[in-house]
Amino acid sequence: MIPRYSRPEMSTIWSDENKFKTWLEIEILACEALAKSGKIPQSAVDDIKAKAKFDQKRIDTIEAEVKHDVIAFLTNVGEYVGENARFLHQGMTSSDVLDTSFNIRLAQSIDILLKDMDRLLAALKKKAVDHKYTLCIGRSHGIHAEPTTFGLKMLGFYAEFSRNKERLITARKEIATCAISGAVGTFATIDPYVEQYVADKLGFIPEPVSTQVIPRDRYAAVLTCVGIIASSIERLAVEIRHLQRTEVREVEEFFSKGQKGSSAMPHKRNPVLSENLTGLARLLRSYALPAMENIALWHERDISHSSNERIIVPDAMIGLDFCLNRLAGIVEKLLVYPDNMIKNLNRLNGLIFSQRVMLALVDTGMKREKAYLLTQRNAMKVWNNEGNFKDLLEADQDVMTALTKEELEALFDTNFYTAQIDFIFNKVFHS
Image (tube, rainbow, N blue to C red; front, side, top):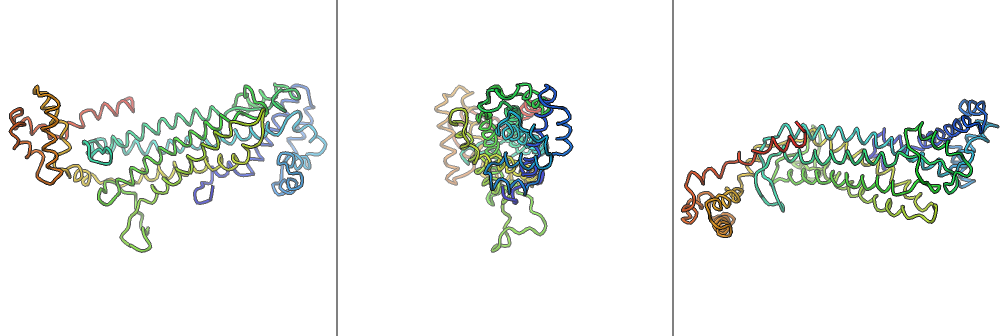
């Protein structure tokens, strides 16, 4: 991921330094297990621990010659360790190191993403609670439907991202596996005890069947999870973008002192952060496809997955970390304009109460088809700028034969639409 969309903590996880660090951790843990099972001397393990280190530039130089990254790494470590380096990587294959290391770094990444998610959830919860009863218009097809509250909008996003947090937790469990099983995964050259020992030390479980590589359906599950979260991020970003449009202006991204919105038009205050998230969400979703295609490797393994995983997995983790934090910042500082919400809610001169009118007519014993027709014929006049909905209904003899003026007046009370808000909030917060 380019630096513009990278945060230091997550980027460090996917650095070469951390990669080689985890490779060395795995190799040393395997040596510890071999010593405990009597396969190699404990003194050799102590010597390896004391001397083992690596130099990235030297690894690059060796790899340029041998054309194999793990061999280059082991050669470099061996230069520091000396004679006892012969016990490193004993009975193991490259994928034992590569895939187990990959999962270590994925677990580290998801731990950061879970903290990111908690920040976003806290911001959404605060906005939901603060605006629990802030009336605004609900829209379907982009058209005014019926009243809702801005708090309920935010509550819906809170619930969605709560599900996304659970998906992340599941994804972490999905990749918390370790494979130290040797060529084609038969354990012919290494005792299964070594795999179990390494797994226990890492807080992982042994991969049930590794066939030399950890099955790629696990990574497809993680990248699909990233794609779903990216779509949720975009859904909220799009909501903010729509609500910030000049004709709506119910909310607005925070505009800092000294910020400029346009090189040509000094008046502009654009939803650039939300638009940025929309673009990044498209990228993050795209990583799920190669991850799914990586599942179908030849026989026990090939490396057709390797090249794209070096790109899509770090980018997915770094990109999602950036997006979740940017979105949390947007929500935390979001400017909310309740007066504009009320203004927009009243824009259609009462049409938003049409369902209540129709149902009230039905409750008098009128057939639903007739009630719909009476309500709609007055509503259509309002669309054509021919008057106010309630006034037109009062002038409609067919309507007023069924309803009293007081009954009609009561149907235009917005409090009706907030009666169950507490119930919905309690479902989410279990309070």
